Amino acid sequence: MAKSLRDIVPGGKSASNLQAVLPYKDLRQWLEEAKKLGEVVIAKGLGVEEEIGAAAEMVMQRDDAPCVVFDEIPGYPKGHRVLVNFFGGKRKNMTLGFPTELSKIDLSEAYYSSQIKELPSIPHVIVESGPVTENIKEGDAIDVTAFPAPMWHPADGGRYLGTGSYDVTIDPDSRWMNLGTYRVMVMDKKTVGFYISPGKHGRVHRDKWMARGEPMPAVIVCGGDPMTFLAACTEMPQGQCEYDIVGGMRGEALKCIKGKYTGIPFPADAEIVIEGFVDPRERRPEGPFGEWTGYYGSDMRDEPVMHVKAVYHRNNPIILGCPPQRPPDEMCRYRAITRSAMLRSNVEKAGVPDVAAAWAHEVGNARMLLGIAIRQRYPGHAKQAGHVAAMCHVGAYAGKYVVVTDEDIDVSNLEELTWAMLTRSDPATSIDIIHGAWSTPLDPRIPPDEKKKGNMTNSRAIIDACRPFHWRNEFPKVNAPSPEEARRARERFGYLLEGKDKP
Image (cartoon, rainbow, N blue to C red; front, side, top):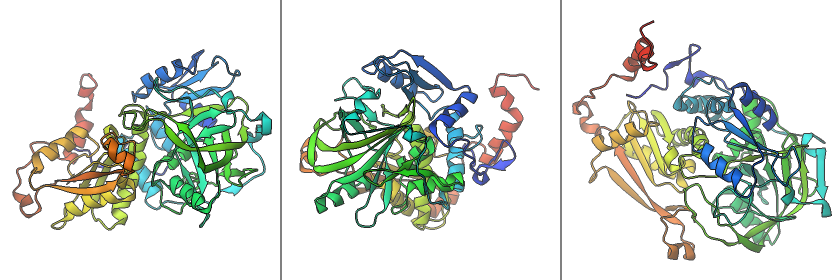
């Protein structure tokens, strides 16, 4: 049965009490740490039109595959590189600053306890220069096509420079600065596409600038440090800047440079930064792009574009590539860890007591299938937990199913969660349906005619897979050891799983 989140991990500490120590500040330091783990390979001579995308798809589907750095890319200056599959193997734990021995749910628990529960914050600081200012291109010198942006999927509408990038926008009213992850398509030398799904923080900012009749200032960071990228991927609280949250995680302020044209800060040690303005009234065809659902959820359509005013980059820049594939893939792996921690935080802060664990499942790209484990305290507790999980900030966008179960179930284990659902729920009485919930044009199940109307909503199923509260003490006993008994068995007899004789 489930391993307790409070089980003792190597080193004699509980996963929930570990403190993160990030061993890197930028992408290059991260790469050196990954090399120390023996999890980096260099691939030379692969092209951007087909080969890099095909190779990336192959490795990103596997958790045990190494990080790959594509070098000596034909048609581009020597030293220009593309890095993919950063979140796999032991480097998952290294990226978040925790021991490599932790399981995925213990890693999420440690991340929640030390980084998300209290959400420490240290404001970023402004400096005059840094490695990213080694090269500054303005005016006629701007050429975003000079970077090796791959054709990630064969049917994509173009080459995408921004998949492992994050985009920085500012609310024109409150001046709140937000980091988000939105795809960035190369249009021409001085123009890139900038798709943002409805309801996302960057889209809210863009709509406000449009209502003012003004272009939106923005910067795109291609090749930032992985922790800042993960923070930009995660539903952090509205009104808080991810730069400052990452500073709190590091215990040290991020050093940033203000863009010459927009005034928007970007990390001084980033690899590539694109600065410009998005005029929502000017649109060009964008897409299609193979998305995180595993489908081409939206066809080519007119979308706003960014006019580039400046490009900043380090010598021999590295592009961080994180293109979505059919789940589960690399994107699912990192989103499951970080989003599960935020899901637990959201549910607890909404007043739901005794949450034992939360997991946003990889197969649903950490959105469409959520598992919540609780210690039942009162009638309706399971329903409360399920509905809050479905409609909180982390769960609201593009969700489908929420399964709530008892604390003896490891909700990160898809088989255990399914077993609990099959044996502790009743289809006629255990499922609630929510209609008209927030979804996305990328949802392949929304009918085409509804998409044309702009009706991007779906339904949610809340499944109560807990032992029925009023007769839970009479529910049949499980014919398996308790989590504590299972832990002791692993300690005593784990050598058998390794195919060894008794030591």
